[in-house]
Image (cartoon, rainbow, N blue to C red; front, side, top):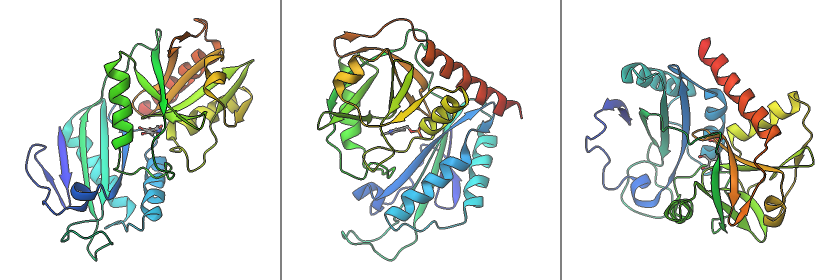
Length: 277
Ligand code: PLP
């Protein structure tokens, strides 16, 4: 396991974060998670682009050019000697005496490279529970403030589910750490990329694959009832990839999932192909 803080590689267990770090005290920062397949970061450009968007949204200035972030990530992966890994990186507003308004200080970049979490059984899929979406209204920012997300995930896992599906005013927004898709009558549905959801990199890739496969795509809000009456449903994320849902609360979905299976297969092909380069 590899770690980087501010300007150097450090031991992952070293105590390096000052007590007045704004990430530590306020969650005042943003992050990304990138999957490494066969020693290569997957869709890094897309992640860096979203990182920049999140930074801009909260007036955070990158302390160095994006090319340096790529170099740090590449060096981290090399040092880790891992082929299958998750790269986590974040940017906080920096180190300054505690005050709510933005202080004048350089932002702090940090990163870890850790072993990739194994993904659940894709054949079987996961069960999910629906919970009220209690987050703020700027969910497109990949902010460090994940308290509502981790509370929801904890409830889901404690009750034996794989994910919590968040619902705001009857509308399914996304998972606690994933985006949500439904299939009905041969069409693929997902919440539009508004401020209510994180614009998932995996979501975008799956939408692109659907277009290539000529699966009609509907980016439109849908209700919990619609999801439960779907022919198929799945979540997407960097860590879970494309993961079918077999049960929503007490509703069991059909076992046959032709469209999900096709998208799983194409997504796996995509990163295999990428990793071969
Ligand atoms: N939505 C939320 C709230 C997330 O935390 C994540 C990622 O962990 C996603 C969606 C999926 O995004 P991506 O596919 O970019 O990993």
